[in-house]
Length: 264
Ligand SMILES: [Zn+2]
Image (cartoon, rainbow, N blue to C red; front, side, top):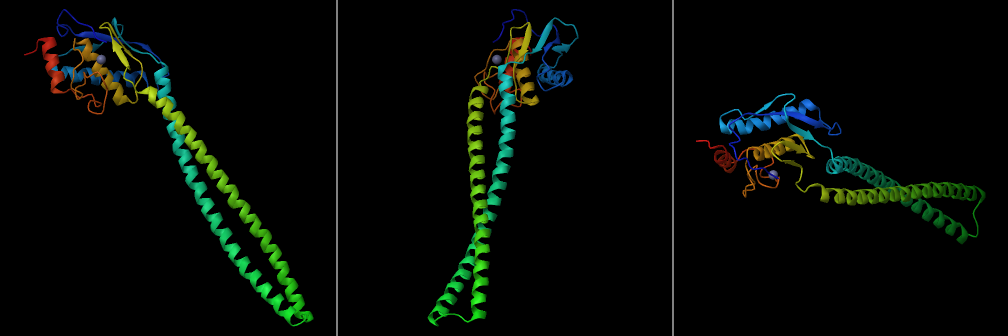
């Protein structure tokens, strides 16, 4: 939205104050003011004159109105943090799974060769028509060892299965969180984050202090009577995009300022 001044908008310094300041925006009022002042300076540097001035109690208000859009952005930030920690969890569970599987395989091959040995011994003594007492006792001891190794093997196998399941569950959680994130993200980034009717500026949402400043530069531009420009690199383009996200004035912005304010 923009507002056409019939008068030269640069003739008088526009005094402004912060109006509504919703503290659900996770910034302080003084941080906000810092960004407002940096934003106004960009135009003032280009114009070579004072254009805006912070005056507590001034009629022109800059309002910070916390809406659904900003809530979504914060939710998206939180989800993105939780995705990072889930990713860490997945890789640690997978590491444990690999270790458990290696441990199981080691135990299994040791059991297999012990069992083969036992079977060979039993077969041998059977072919001899039976084992003498001392050999028989050895075979009994071997059999006991095999039984306890088999139990340990079973425990190791269960651990492998448990970790595989845990790993799959974490991956499923991750995937469904990604879906939630995408549904929030898709609707979050249309650019309708601020507006002005020339008597006040409303800020609804932004991603970072840097983006807030860019938004303020843009809205101040409208207050100076500048309409949207076609060039996506200009701060007065209708979309906030990667080419104008730093809020720097493009030569097209400066040209538009010169026209609007009759600068030489
Ligand atoms: Zn605009």
